[in-house]
Length: 449
Image 1: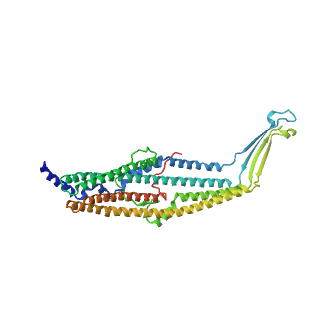
Image 2: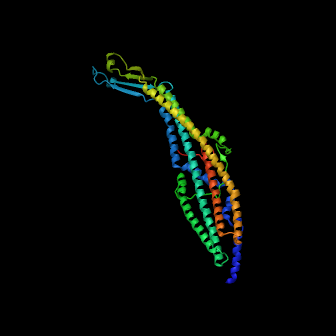
Image 3: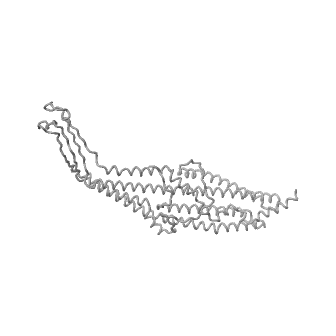
């Protein structure tokens, strides 16, 4: 049996001397940029969310409800019909129907009042549509943010688990060296690797638990079961910014102009401003007189008609005017509309300032994430792999303690996790920027009114 020990030790030396680029395969996939098609599953999820999210459907029904206001406010008031019956005429002769009189009256608001009402309703419908579009963009952002959060959590679990597997592969080698007496600090090395394994296993359990709420949040946005599986790519591609259906550079000044031109919340405030201006016009026109036109038909023996021999049914044309003498309510409505306009204008100006700040912040986050991806993928992780290879060689020569190998492997794991973190941050910053402006290529909701 002892004759196989030298052979086994030779194999151990060969394993420890394998170049790290061939041995540490868990990190190799992070060194290459993923294809753009890797996000195809996310496109399908966005389409599903756009058609099945309950909150978005509720916003759509609000648009449908508001769109029916135009027909209501633009209609004429209901006509008034009066019926009179002369119950005790002076002479009981004559037919019963002759004692009846019928009149009808239709009121008309001042010229242009109905047009102003319809205009106010149209502007409010447009504001509701912009609010719906903003909710739609927010949903697209929330779905993508949750997706990248889950990708980050899942990849962190996988990389941590693979790191544990690497340590598990090293443990029998260290144990054999300790048992054969070829390593002076073998017992310490064995304890050190066991400590690292336990620490990583504890971290792994925590990371696995953290995935559940992220998964449930993502599935809730798609109106799915909380435990429904989520398809993830192997890696995240480096994508350009798509704003208003065109590719734009990560330049804050250029992005701000696009956002201010196409942000739905800004358009919503503009529509509300137009609606309150129409309200002021409605209040002004309603302060003018209202005209009523009508007709009355009286029977031949209705009251005084009986006194006139040979008299047929009487027909009378009527006109009435409602004079709004009490002006205070109409002035108050106009002042209220003007105050609402000033409020909306101030809110729109504040939103424009906030959007500028948001663009600046997200562009900075996007660029910083890109730099972190480049740094860790092209510089730090490859150099850490080279350093680990040197440490393995020095360890075999007795010049480096095993503790340094453990520390460098943990450093490599941190660099790998930093790549995943930076990629997720880059995509989330991109999503935040793209949410600030409408884009025709996003999945369009298709609801039944």
